[in-house]
Length: 265
Ligand code: IPD
Ligand code: CA
Ligand code: CA
Ligand code: CA
Image 1: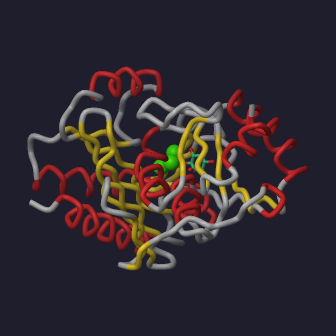
Image 2: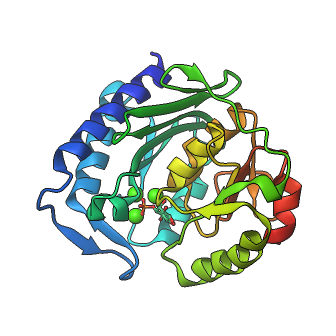
């Protein structure tokens, strides 16, 4: 079974489902707080991805954002237990739910597979632009079949840097503190509303770098691999290596990594 090819097909199928519901009267509710929304389409997309993975490989482990773990703390306990699994699927059924709700382009389907704590496959699909980003460990990163390469931007002053605004209040405050510093030193800042899309854009050289505090592994597993396979660097915001438990994520073209780390520390 070629899991990468299967994951690409599943992401496109979920993308088509999500697009078919865009702008229709779907139900929306608040999850942990008013900053954290979910729609019935997030749940339907996750259910589709989960059932496709189960049909393909019934013995694989599945972790999706919308599973009823009760709380993010419980999810992280589950993730810690699942880290040693040889076939762990990590799924964000819609990354950028707020964009989807508002009808703003820039939401993605993110599917990753990890083997004993290392991400081996990453797929991100942007159904609005029909852009499919993918990577396999050691085999490079691609966009619709074309190899991806991070930008050659050599200094923070020439960099276009993205961030996001997490729902957790402490994480949001940490982003704001970093933003204050980064904005003073880089060319400009963007916030497109999907962490996975930001990482895919770093891999594609469209953005020089992206950081955000308080993310979850479903937001970043696929993107971190795609950045690395495109020649970039992914770490936490202190410079420690990226792992499944990393919450404060920082990906860049590698060249500006240290310079930007100094702003984020
Ligand atoms: C969110 C998006 C957003 C980021 C938030 C995430 P969701 O994911 O990635 O860009 O700023 O921190 O929670 O909830 O739309 O899947
Ligand atoms: Ca969410
Ligand atoms: Ca997400
Ligand atoms: Ca999501």
